[in-house]
Length: 190
Image 1 (cartoon, rainbow, N blue to C red):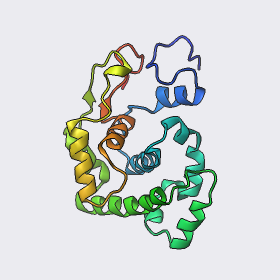
Image 2 (image 1 turned 180 degrees about the vertical axis):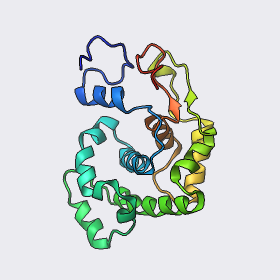
Image 3 (image 1 turned 30 degrees about the horizontal axis):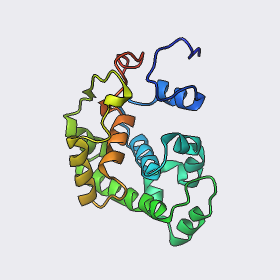
């Protein structure tokens, strides 16, 4: 794929991994619970770090966290948590590792209540992505009243590391909001 001639958001710069993520995944509406949980877990670990750091370790996270299977993660033993703390391929933050297990359990509870996590999260926008019209990255917020509302609700349900900024990044990643800039070739595609 020739990526040099396409006009895109400026945040991927010239990093091939970032460009691939931008061009194929970011902002594409996701309704599959397994994929939603993958992004939620990765966003949890991103707190305080750059997204490219997480992207570069994504496959390591996939191996370390049972292919992002929330059912398995919810049942991790203390021994497994300790093993993860020693895994140099991921972010070795004990609180974030424990949050992955906590969030997997909370994710399962939401699924029990709503049938799917997708149904729960998409109800905040009546099932339709918000189409923003930002001309530049500087116009994009780091959080919104909607991300505040979702963050608050997730916290009430027992989720950890789901502050409003992390939730907004999650909304962008899974396509709840289309934050591609208006001059980006992906803007109209997603």
